[in-house]
Length: 89
Image (cartoon, rainbow, N blue to C red):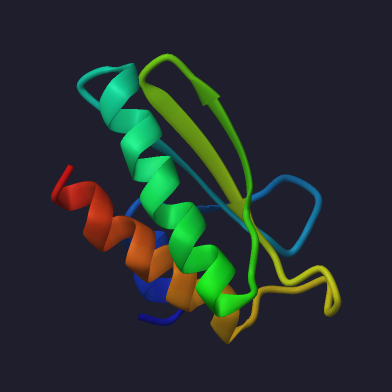
């Protein structure tokens, strides 16, 4: 997916920066945390790490390639992976 596909799929531009952000909602805390654990493994494998926060059944994610201060292919690949795993959660 490219940036526009992600925006069409619920991602938004983060305020004041070239970054993607999305709030993922889950049935409960356990499912949210399990999803975060799975995504942490993918992020580590890609050597690309999200900014994120978890509150009960919600995970807020912001993606930006900090070395570029921009959205890159790494961000779109991780966002696509997150969306695919979330649909199955």
